[in-house]
Image 1 (tube, one colour):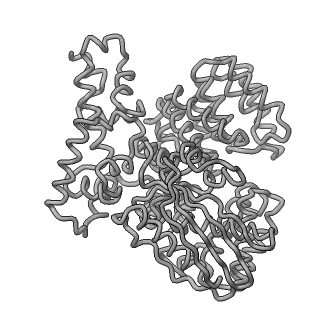
Image 2 (image 1 turned 30 degrees about the horizontal axis):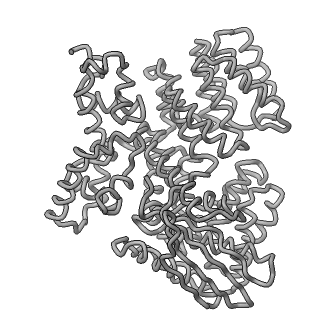
Length: 596
């Protein structure tokens, strides 16, 4: 389904006399995308997917079909000295009809005010009911040379070219030296240091210090700036293992910038890691809708399905990601694991051989082989590869995931639980990030009650259960929504759910459902939480559960497994189905089915 409130911004054409000003036109395009993303109720395709069509002469109708948007914004930029001219036009993708066009002549120092003005105008043209309130800016540049340095640095950052690392950091620093209040430059510098530090191109201690300095500076300038909360959330999750604070801060980012695929993806990771898999997958699906050409979203979905042992689905999303971004290395590790769990060992070995032939492959081939042999129960061959893994570790030639967590999984597969726990404890000392997902990783199911496992997992700070249950009510405590208005929406929603049955769609999310009754996602969430005394996930899954109870004993479904029927009812995860069923019914699906 294509949302009527969906839009993609194609890279604006550089019309300046200097063709090297492409960094400027690309940068301003990205800033307009960012401004539009702050509007609640508007689905804005992310930069990665919009820029996938740069330089291609495709009809807007074809682009709309490829990335599922109802409208395309395109235009041009001409820069001359301290002046800039921007032209833009908005086109419907179903028929190619031009809805609106305009042009602006402004001074460069007002460029950020202009981009927010353009975003507000577009929102009004799409639908007057869309909330424009978040789209405001009072950023006036102190020095236009700072803007130039920032846009050049950001242009280099988007190339993800390690050889440009020193140059981009220098340009970000130049931008903030020229204009100490240029908040976007601090955000860009933080992203650059995070990337270069995590890949070893900048000393990690130096990178962490710089990220902290940038975050503090952004919070001093504007504590409401949305991007900074994604950085803060990421720091809490990956570096401090505090999932509770990571979720609080990613929510702050999404409250300020709802159409923000990176934040949605991170929230999907955080929720899944805390055990709320249904909500986590929903946020991944929302991110994928906004950025279908992103190189991590579908691999993240595949990883979550792999952890919860839903391996057919895991393989589906991993292969989708490989088609989109074949250069993303980590997904091949996940693919080998999934193929082994499906006992498709010939395919797994073939994948290992392909990876072994790649020059400078960051994946460790002994890792892959050890997992392969351990999955087949070939202990001697698996332990031979384990020794090679340890040799690589000692020689410090390893790349990718920390060794200890992978070794713990190998020993789990081999049934050597005490050694698995040894390496789990070692991984905690090393702050090995895969441990953050142990709560949903089915490999650890047999050791959940082991005292050593419980002690090790105390290092991860999860949100308290009572906070999870009450946070929605707190969020909307000061709502001005009227009772009669909410009752009307609830009645309209109930009629829709009973007739159109949108809950049969396993990827249905809050935004999809809101659009079907023509309100914003934020308002629908308020209606359900304040007046329906429920949340989106429980509301939708309630309909799925009722349908399961209707069909599970019908003759037509006699040959279906319980899980197949759950998928038939719209559940997108075995974990979600089982946990929601037991929470609601007080017994497992198998127990219910046996009762007849």
